[in-house]
Structures are given as C-alpha cells and as structure tokens.
Image 1: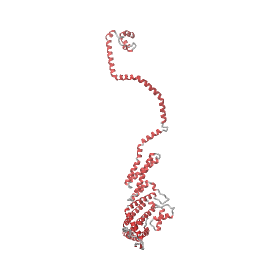
Image 2: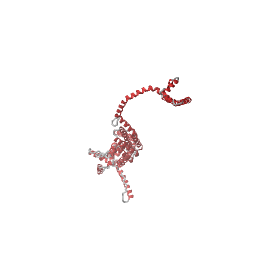
Image 3: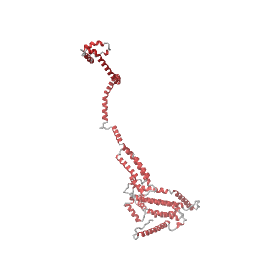
Image 4: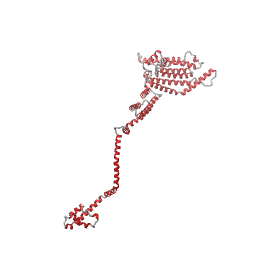
Length: 495
C-alpha cells in the first residue's frame, strides 16, 4: 500500500531538487508513508503540517548542535580523506617492501644470534665483558693506581723526618709488600707490572736515602741500628751471608764501613786549609834540606819549625780518634755476629797467645800463609786501613815538627788514639816504632836530637805507661776505700 501512496504523492515532489526526492525503497520513506496511511483525514489536515514543522525544526537544531561540536573533527577528516587517495598507494608500496625485507631481516637476526651467542667465543663480546668488568671494579683500579703515589709520599715523608720516622718506613714497606703480592698473583697484567716497576724504582730511592743517612756526620748508635734494620727489610739482598766465608755480616756490614769511612774522609777534608799550610812547610823543609846538601844558602824562605803542621796533625788525630772509635764500636754493636763463631774464636785465642791486641795484623799474616782460605770479615781489616791512613799522614807531615816537645805531644795523642781503639781490639801503639826511622831519615842530620841513645817513641811510651800506672793505682785506691775489703768496686782505666 505504501507504493501506490508514494506514486500518488510523487508528482507533488517534482518541483524539488532531484537529490532531495527520497527513493521509494528508502526505509525512512516507507515508514513515514505507512504512518500516513494510519492517520485520519482530519489529522492529516490539521496536525500533520505542524508535526512536520516541529520535526524539521528539531532535526535542524540537532544538525546545528552536531556541526558546532564536530566542526574540527569533520574538517580534519575531510582533509585526511582528501589525501587518502595519495597515501594509499604509498602504503601499498611500503607494505610490499616490508614483505620482501622480512626474509632478509630474519636471516640477519639468525646470523646475529649465532655470532653473539654466549656459547661461542667472540672478540666483541670479550671486549664488552672486559669493559663491564672494568666499570664494576673502577674503584679498585683507582686504589691500585694510587699505590705508587702513596708509596712515594711515604718515602718522601720518611726522608724528611729521618730514621726516627718508623711509621712512614713501615707504611712504605707494607705498600711495597702488597704491590709485590699483587705482582705475584697477576704476573701477566701490564698494569700491575707497570705499578711494580714504579714501586721498585721508589724502593731504590728509599734504599739510596737510607744509605746516605749512614753517611751522616752526627749519626748515633740508635739511629744507626734503626737505619741498618730498615736496610735489612728494604734491601734483603745486602744481608745475605755465606757460611763458607768469614763474612757473617753480609754485604750490609761492608756497606756500613764504606759509608762511615766516607764520612771520616769527608770530615778530614774540612782540614784542607791547614793541610795546605802544612804542605807549604813541607816544601820549605825539603828546599832547605836540598840547599844544605848542595852547600848553597837558603833562598830566604822563613822556617818556623812546623807550627802549622802541628796544628793540622792535632786536629787530624783528634778527629781520627773520635770517628774511628765511633765507627768500630757502632759496627760491633750493630753486627755482633761479625766477630762470633769458631773461626773468630781461633783468631782471638791466637792473639792472646802472641800477646797482641790488634786482630788486623794477624789477619793479614793468615792471608799470606794460606791464600786459599776464605776472606776475613770486613771489621778484621778495617782497623788496619784506618791505621794506614793515620800513619801515612804522620810519616808525611811529622818530620816538619822540629820541636821535640811538640812531637812528644803529638805521639802521646797518637797513643791515646791507639788506646781508644785498643779497647775494641785494634791497639796499634807498637807501630810508633816505624815512625822513628822515617823521622830520623827525613830530618836534618845535624839535629842533636837524632844522636840520643833512645828514640822518642820509647820515651813517650814510658811516660805514657807511668802516667797510666799512676792513674790506675789512684783509681784502685779510691775503689778500695769505697768498697772495703771486697775490692769489687775498683775502677780500671785503660791506657
């Protein structure tokens, strides 16, 4: 019934635009025509027009409200839709490219997975592992790199404070021991090897500093013992002993004697101005002796009897006595094992049998008797070297002293020096006899002193022993007076 009604009403819709004419099969049109067929004629005439107007107005308001709300979205959709025709072919092209690239991507991923698998060895993975390991241990590596700097600081502080700085020396040795342990654990590490090389260089500087401290002029026994103790720990190779020889003190004992001998020579070199004056007097004496031999007169040079030489020898002997006694006594305190042992006991017993106090002469005689014997200890020959130094100086300059009293004073001073070393087993008082012939040969033959029956050194020895005997008797009397009949408190003074 809807179709005839649509045909009936279609002629009235021809005046409208074709796009606004609804189709006959439109559901909305069919629904409205079905509603019209149910209305009465009076309703169609009176109410339908008003109902259509209200519906049209309501629809218009809804459309206006929708357009105001969706204006931006509609415009954007319109713009996108206008480009849709252009983007759709491009999307199809990209999809086709992706379709053809997926097999290559899958093959590359498979190769990557095989190459960088944990089950296989790979240089890049190893490098990455090392980098990660280094990152995790950055603090430890920083501490290890700071070890040479800390060691150098400890050594510098120890050098500034001297041998009394036990803390800095102990810190330096602990750091060196720790670095040495690391080097033994990680021998193949270039970093540890480099740090170990720097440490060894620093320890060599420490060793040189300790050796130079042994050459100090005013070194005491305590400081010397501490310095030798540190050297034993810093350079243990210097303390190696050989049981087949008499060198029980090792190279360290030789080094100690060399350092102290160098200090003695340096101290004696401070007398160089006086020595130059003594040399001038020697030249004048020799010139006068030459002129007297040839019968010519003197050349006008004034000869004052060797006053400058006497001053030089007094200073020389005094320094020699103090330094030589200090060196030998300090050596025996620091290296007590150097004079111990069966071979040393045999040497001492031989000295007692011969009635000698100096061990140096017998050591030289023993070496001459059997050249295949092991070399003696350094301290056995060191007093001989010191004595040779003293007597070479005396033989060179003592003839310049013409005054007998001055010569006796110098010889007495030499006897005190011999007694000082004699307390340590190095008495050389009997060697004064070698000076008499040299002095008599170098001095003028017209001197009346050369015609005396007894030599000067014999008279000096007698006077020295008489004085020593008086002092010993006086000291013994004082000891008996204080100690009663026991006599245990008697005082003995060695000459």
